[in-house]
Amino acid sequence: MKSWMHHAVRACTVLLAAGVAHTALAASCATSAAPRAVDYPWMSIERWRQMHAEQVARAAQGGIDVMFVGDSLTEMWPKALWDSNFGHLKAANFGIGGDHTGNVLWRLQDPAIAAIKPKLVVLMIGVNNINLCKESADAVLGGIRAVVARLRAQYPAARILLNAVLPAGTAGSDVRRRLVALNRRVRTLNDGETVFFRDYGARFMGADGNLSKELQPDLLHFSEKGYRLLADAMRPDIEQLLAPKPYVAVSPDGRTRLKVTAGEGKLAYTVTRDGATVIAQSPLGLSTSLGTLDGQSLRVDGSDSKVVSETYRPVAGKAASVADHYNEVELRLVGKDQPFKLNVLARSRESA
View 1 (cartoon, rainbow, N blue to C red):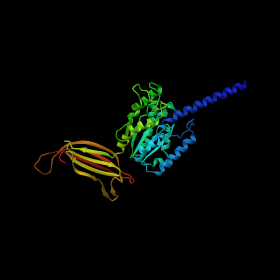
View 2: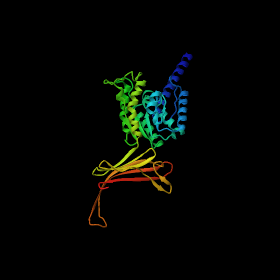
View 3: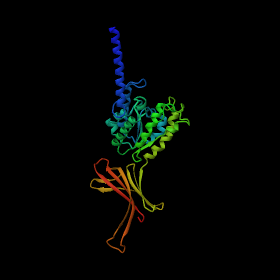
View 4: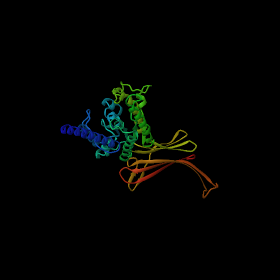
């Protein structure tokens, strides 16, 4: 009798411990920065640590313009496809299979990874919060929002290509419904300025909503053909987001365009009138006691635009009043290596 009770108590204790461990895992997935704490049949904790160490070493080498961050869907890009589509963009892969948002938050804290200066971060994360952590769409949104906030703070000069969690499971399944609900929420993080949301999921679904096993053999991970389709969808957006961003002030009559571009270590401006170039692209800089302030020493921290329509009385001349009507773009510039700020106003009037 005592032996039976002893085994029963042990069994209950094991079940309770497993339940507590699962609850702790689920509670920590979304927003708690933590390393991998679970051995999976397909990846041990030791292997996870090794992969992270390899990525830290790659980060320390520098020379990374495009930083892919995510889970197995990022990790498993076939090398030949990766090299042909992203190699020339100085891209580096920071995906690890099985990672959820909390794991990514922890990995981003590493000093070598934090020191990267990417121009673009390609983020695809969240499916393991759903599949492994069993979290709600609202909880996963909190995790993705935390990762995006970390990326923005850590890499202020970078844009973020925020991918929807791509479809998994069968049409109408609980997993699919939860992913759809999640993506509706993730879409709200798009601001069109720094964070750009893209959903390529429709490319992988048939008319009935089902996935092709030719593209996703296990209805989650991609085959080489699936990655080729993803590359074809993603690459144009990546190239567009890497292009220098133009800031344009157009005169009220639409005839004059003053365009300022910031990118590739350069600040430059161009002026056109009725489509014809008046001032070809010219460098924009300022000589100060701190040295020359240009695209090498400055980065754009934000921008604003406004329309101005005013009337003022001149102190001389025949006119009793003069209309001042123009469109303005203001660039807020900050030092890359020195703590200073500089605002540049670009104004385009109908007459100038």
